[in-house]
Image 1 (cartoon, one colour):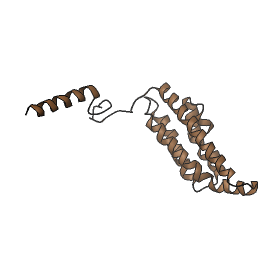
Image 2 (tube, helix red, strand yellow; image 1 turned 60 degrees about the vertical axis):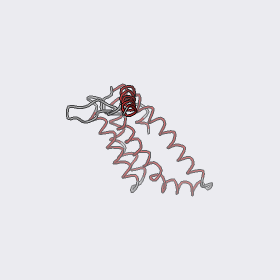
Image 3 (cartoon, helix red, strand yellow; image 1 turned 180 degrees about the horizontal axis):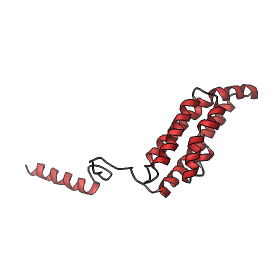
Image 4 (cartoon, one colour; image 1 turned 90 degrees about the vertical axis):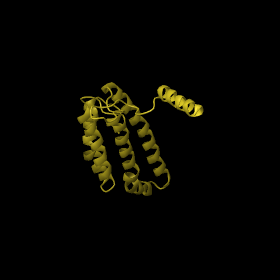
Amino acid sequence: MYRLMTMMGIVAIACGVLGCGGSGTETESGGDQSAATITKAQFIHGAERICANLAKEQEAALVSLTKKYPDPKAAQEHFREDYGAIVAPFMRQLADELEGLGKPKGGEVAVAAMTNGLRKASRALETTNPETVKQYRLYTFKRAAFAYGLKTCPAL
């Protein structure tokens, strides 16, 4: 019995020190609000970092594709064919990571416009001419990102 009480005391202390339970704050409806609200500046800082990292990864993947084909004409043909398969997953990852940052109060509509624009462009990119997608489908994302104050992301 003494061991059981000692173990329960250790667990209680560990929960108090380590924070057992939800990691965020509770909302009025009882839900966990761990990544719900950040400031606009925090969102912009995080988004710029994410965009810069993903841009480097995407560029490396595209350069790797062109290096597979020593003949420039063959490289260009494969580039057009494979572009969507390479870039679309990066767009979806960007949308997921931007949402993962949380939504700044008052910026919910802007974040939704960015992530929805990316998802629509990624779906279109898998089935459509890349030039059409880059120019028209990404416009929604780029416009929303630029208007919200992002500089790196609209350059993708």
